[in-house]
Image (tube, rainbow, N blue to C red; front, side, top):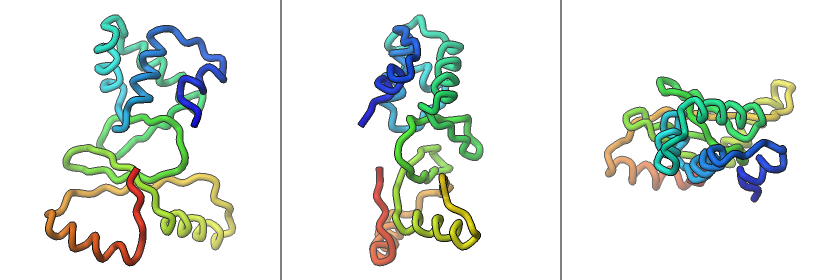
Length: 153
């Protein structure tokens, strides 16, 4: 799998030391950070990295299709490296974003587009949820296994 750093080099983007640090922060992130979070993490590596540098670098990466921007309801823009298609479940209490894949949901979206006379080229599913009691969750999970397989990422 090609890394974010490899993709930057392939596109011929100038990779200053500060940009390399931002690439590292983004590559190591699994939590869909916003610009401020990327900046806080980058400053731990190099105190001289300014927030403006982070904004410009993220915009550059986004413009070159290296990052996906997510605007989850009620939250600042968050970013992740471009990867194969997946869905998001957003915990509205904590703001945590959980990724998952589901072949049944994918097939259903393609089928809907087909029935409406379209070929699906891209899709995004965002679920907004609150945690339920552990006992209820375990009971529901057992039932879900019979209907669909959810692959956590």
